[in-house]
Length: 288
Ligand code: GRG
Image (cartoon, rainbow, N blue to C red; front, side, top):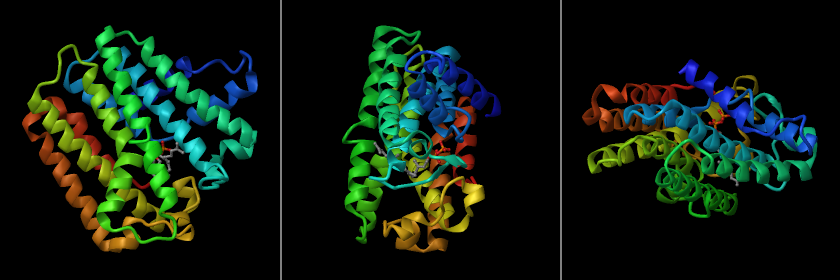
C-alpha cells in the first residue's frame, strides 16, 4: 500500500501543471490542494481492482490520479465559506484560507477539467478511455458527489431517516469510491465478466458505506491533530450523521458488519483480490 501511495504522489505531481508555468499562482494552488496529503484510499482501491484484472500499472496511475484530482477538487469546494467553511484540511490551512476564495473556486474548476484531460490522454484503447470517462463523469455528476452534496446542504438541521441518510452518502462519498473500484477494473485487458461485476458491486457498496460510517465515528472520537481537520463539525452544523442517528456503539457495529460483507463479496474472486481484501480493514480500522 505504501508503494502505491508513493507512486500515486509521483504520478499526480507529473499530471498536474508545473507551478513554474503561468498562471503560476493557480498551478501552485492546484498542487497545494492535491499533493502531499490524504490517505489516497481511492487510488489504492483503483490499483487493487486493477491488479485483480491484470491492468497495466501506468494506466492505473492515470486513472488513480484523475480520481484523486476530482476528490481534491470536491474537498476544496466543500471547505469554502459557502459550504462547510473549514479552516483546516489534511492538517494544513484550507485552499481558500491560503490563496483566497476566488482562487479556491478556480482550483476546483481546473482540477475537475484536468482529471478528464488525464483520462483522455491515458495509455489505453479508445473504448477503455470512454469507459473510464463515463465512470468518472457519473460519479462527479448531480447523480453522484455533487448531487449528494446538494442533499447534504439541504438536510442541515433535519433528522434524515436512515434510508435517506444512506442515499445521500452513496452519492456524496460512495459514488467516487465506486468509480475508483470500477475504473481500476476497466483498466484490465478484458471486459468484466458478470460474476466479477456482481462481486465488485457488492464490495464497493459495503466499503463505500463503511467508509462514511467510520468517518462519522472518527468525527466524534478523534481530536483535531489526528484528523487534520476540525472534529465535531457536522454536529455543530446540525448535520445528520450515523452517530447522531444510531449512537456510537451501533455505528461501530454497523461498520464491522459492512466490513464483513465486503470481505465476503470478494470470496469468489480468490487470491487476486488480496489487496482489495486488505483495503476493507484499512477503511474499517482507520484512525484518521
Ligand atoms: C463540493 C462539489 C462538492 C462536493 C463535495 C465529497 C464531498 C462532496 C465533500 C467532502 C466532504 C466530506 C468531509 C465528506 C465526508 C467523507 C469524505 C469524502 C472525507 C474525506 O475523504 P478522505 O478521508 O480524505 O479520503 P483524504 O484527505 O484522506 O483524501
